[in-house]
Amino acid sequence: MKKNYVYFIAPLVGLVIFTGIYWTYAAGYEAKLEAAKKAQIEARNERIRQENLNKKAAVEAAIAAQEKRKQEKKEREEREAREKEQREIAMQARIKAREEARRMQDQVNRLKKEVADAKKEVARIEEEKKRLVDEAAFQRQFVQKAEANTKSLSTVIERIVASDKAIDDAAKAAAAAAAAAKKK
Image 1 (tube, rainbow, N blue to C red):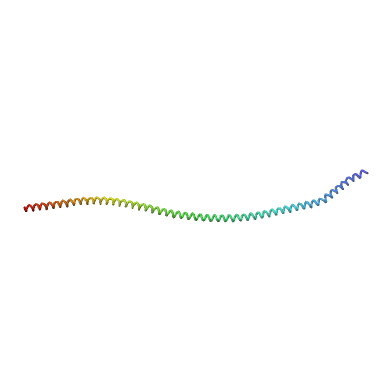
Image 2: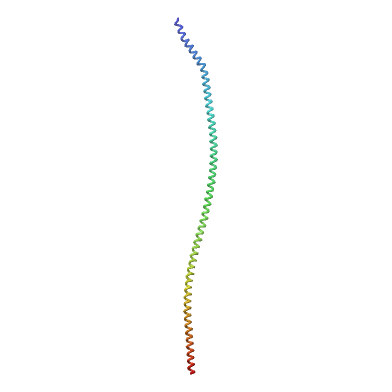
């Protein structure tokens, strides 16, 4: 009979060991489950907190980006307004310059015409001057010839007067000689 107890003792010892282990495990298991649940809740809370921080950072970044875009848009609109104003000013300056160039071209054409007319007038005056100089030279020559003719005519007249006087004197001398011959 001794042998019958051995068959009961070994399973009983196994049952006691199992109960001890199970009891230890069961008592620790709930704590482990509780700890795991707490860890899971903490991990979830930490993840949610991190997501909230990330969302908050994303919202702040989005707000900052939106402000930056607003600022960039404002700067771009100001720059575009300045550029548009500068283009308008440049266009007005170009139109003014084109108008000024047209007026200057008209003035240049008018002045060229006046210069051409003045050159024609100068040429006509030069021609008139040349004609008058030629005429003055001709008249000087004519006056010199007339003076020479006057001198030669004076000489001829003086010779004629001298020959008339000589003839008168000869006639008077002949008459005196004839009268002296009659008286004698």
